[in-house]
Length: 347
Image: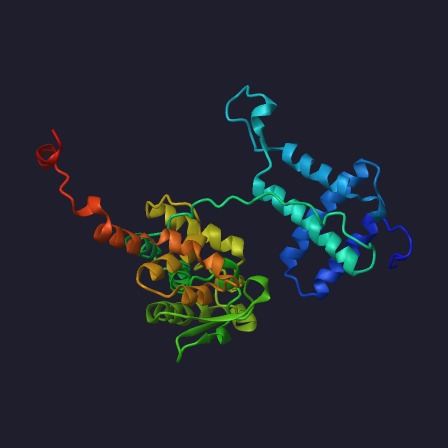
């Protein structure tokens, strides 16, 4: 039953309506679930203070929620040492975590106003925490990539699949959630392209693929994928495989499975840089930038809506900056050895 907009409406009754509104607007399922969870947490905060109707939510209450998020402490896991007190297991909620929870409240009340449940939003004047801008994580070098891709055992089904998966991620900069959604029909061999039908935010795009990546993909499809009848039914490219139990395999991989599968290769190659599977996306963009790619081309490759998001790769691409520094900074072409310095220093 849809609540009457003319009466005070329980917050809890609005959550399923809000969820449906996001579905109608084609929000990604993961986004809907996250927003629903964060909004419910705010509703629980309100209920603990005796506020159960939407009309009872005030700007002061939202500000108290912001202060609560700043003060709250969350568990970090097991104690570091035997005998540690519970206090050592607690940490503040990160700035990004506070921002996400407050933004969910802002979004909910914007919807409530548009839907006619309120005349104005009690969260409209809330000033969200300023998000930090840490340095981007380092990318892989070409040598590190080559070490990683050489590790899979090409005499096994798993090894051939994993080599093809590594090559595709490196060549295209795809997200793990995008690569597991690839189907046979998404590969345009003649043009050397891959169609990503549903990227992040349900945005599709077409990305180029190197001849090397296509060679490994075809070898995997011909030597491994074709042996799994189930794969021919759903046509997803990257599937679960097992040399000993072929007939029980062939299901599409999940994003989490990609991390579990590829993570050990990165470790085995002696790479300690953070980023797991995402580091291949980061690496593809960074190396292209260092080799002279236009930032808008990288924006299209990665599927970024805002050029500012792509801009982080100008910070990690140090090759050009280093060259310019060497050419132009006085200390780069002024003698700096001890004898010269002593001879030229003022007496």
